[in-house]
Image 1 (spheres, rainbow, N blue to C red):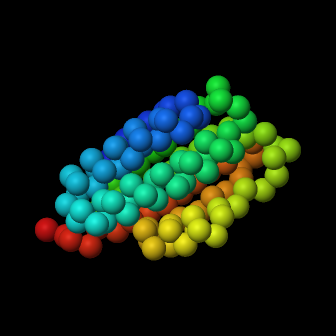
Image 2: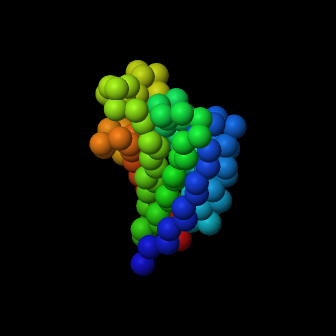
Length: 126
């Protein structure tokens, strides 16, 4: 069984805290450790910030979907982009942070949307 929570917000940095809050709440419900919850929050912040920065304009909407499958939490988020902006790459510092914080992450240009994905396993299984 999997549960999904979807959030939509304007492409503005001030709204990323909502995505962090949802991620934290879901992770706490899954009995993630406090350190793992903080890692997840940091990863959500990094990926959502990349989406907001790449947004076609400030009227764009970021869509974030969190899915719980077993003992894993997955996030897929996207935002409309301008095709002329080219390829999007996570900078070296953010990539290092993401590698340390989550099990898997990616940023992919798909048509006129930038898509971010990540997964984190809960290691404290009851």
